[in-house]
Length: 307
Length: 307
Image (cartoon, each protein chain N blue to C red):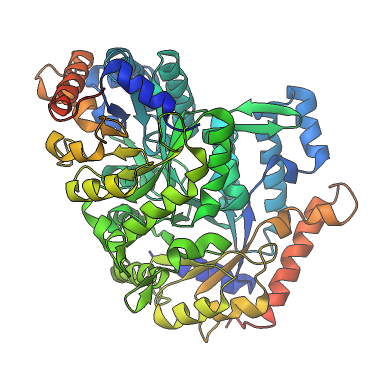
């Protein structure tokens, strides 16, 4: 349990970043999409096959640079069951390349429903006497609005299967203030959520000192990163909002502890769509993605030393 | 846009209830499961085929009684892409029987990701110049923790395609107090969320007076139902927690306005698993489900008159 596995992979690659796999159809290099639409027409099936080729190509390009990938469920759901089939294949392919896989699903529901979600994403479904793995990611993102009922079933799978989860605390988007920054006594709502995350996960601490339940804290709020890093010393952070959304290396340094541990920074579009800036129409999407991931790693290394 | 379509269907059947389709494998009558595992072994494929048969059988049994069904995504996701294929089929089948379909997905994410989710569940995905419907439900459930960024893309599809959505306000589960009942100034967090829901949806009011953005408020909190019904006069309520979770007909009457409008009450297990109480091992699951749905309708009718 806990974030031991991820922290080891970060250390091995000296890179605390994760590449998001958020393939909107228009992010796919035209030559890939065309290959599949020529064969199957402008269909969900063609788009799903194109996403599979693009994501696996990105994984090949990035596997030596980043320790983790984060497929975003929405971009697979929007292609229906064919997209979900591709998501299963992308997760399995990334794991075969020894990458840590964070399924960005932001699920949050109660009781037996949370159990079903956990079985889907981290655990296994029971069919009669047989236990069947489904998406089988290493880690998921969760939404804690419904309280511990929505989280506990995942903690069980984290403990039993050496997995982990991130719960939304302070998100990177502009409208996060509408609920998360409401004043509640001497705290803000995101601080209340942060405290709940630390409490819910307290019995799941790993060797590295971090519990199996982490928090999502956006790169676009450096002062919040600083405040929550101090307050939640056992909580691993997933930090979205780097690059396209405005977060910088100078901002995200506050997510890390003094040993350069305890956080992983995500970038999606700046890596996936790097090919759109080279003027070569996508033919070089792998080189462009790899170069963007190396650049991000090197920017963050200027501020954070991974010991 | 708005809840006009649902309110019409409720009126036609004189029944403000929705049947949840939350098929855990153990909820499926053994004779159905066995038929498929005999053929395919104890596999996700067999479970998915069994869920399809069970859910379609329930839809056949309930179509004349209830105006709506609410498939819960978790129970399909836990069977992987095969489960999602069944979910597409179940939604299409329910719509063919003229039922209103609420996809209980509780999604919440930002910007382009929320757009992708909305395309998946309410709208359509663009593949080149072609618009491809995906799950195409009539309505979804959402989580507003991330603020309006997570909601607005859905409002666009609601407006353009005559659909609607419910956002979690006060949920029916015990741990909902942990965040939702935190005091924030002169309100509680769930009241803050309720006010946001009314504000976010204000430009989407339909003929029936309700906006396209509704709220989830649990049957287990009658005093909250009363308070929020008064406070949020344009907001349609989805009320879970009836039956198995403890909510009664006397409790849920507070969800309705003086014309018996503005709410729909969900029951899942008490209808789906009604066969477990007749001692006939599931052979009568359709009759049992229909009888349970009629009983629930009649209980609520004692307190609520649908004009």
